[in-house]
Amino acid sequence: MKKTLISTLLLTLTSFLFSQETNGASYTANVGVTFTEGNSNTDQINVGFDVQKVTEDAELSLTSFYNYGRSTKTREGEEVNVTNLNKGKAELKGSHVISEDMYAYISLSIEKDDIAGIERRVAAGPGLGHYFRRDDIMTFSVEGGGVWVFEERDDSSDDYAALRIAQNLKWKLSEGAEIRQEIELIADIEEEENYFINAKLLAEATLTASLGLRVEVRDNYNNLPGEGKEQNDVTILSGVTVSW
Image (cartoon, rainbow, N blue to C red):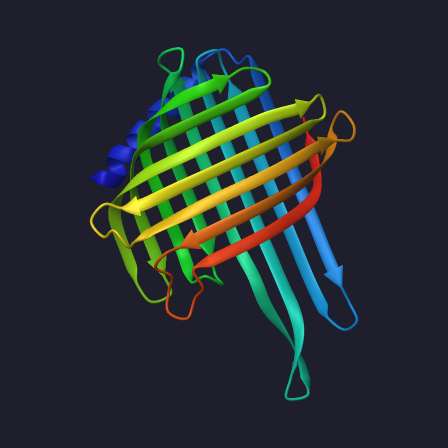
């Protein structure tokens, strides 16, 4: 019942957004590759795809990424490949402006992180947000609502109702440079020690009309990690972007 309700709300808002006249849309793909050979042998690749469709009173965004990395180590005289990074996430969010500085939204995120022991984590739900500033230079907002979290780990599975609080900043520094910053807290309503925080800081500079450079820092904190896992994961990525 819970999954059906959230899915219905999400599909309704998505259908509404796509039915509106599109005033602006942007698509961005990014890729970064790192290789080292010598004293250490490592391979890492990160890819991502972002879509944003904007109307006068609504916005739909999809962001996704996948990161994979491995290193070569010597064990008992033999070289073996060890995976040290294998994570991905997709986020879909639809929002509708209900007044000059207020909006309603529905969000859905699906992620996995093999190294952190997260086989699958899905969080979906509605909420309300407040724009402190919204213009061509800067968009700054704070939002909050409820989500249902469905989680499968290496050694357990669970689902629970949670509170979601987030802050979003998009700042256009110049015609060819922009920074984006997001912080999200999701906290279990019944178990106060069960919460996680996702933070992201991204800087992007345009090289040509369609090419750019991106540097991104992600910090994921889980207060109750799986057995033998660290609470905090920090990932720093850089690469080339293609926009159209």
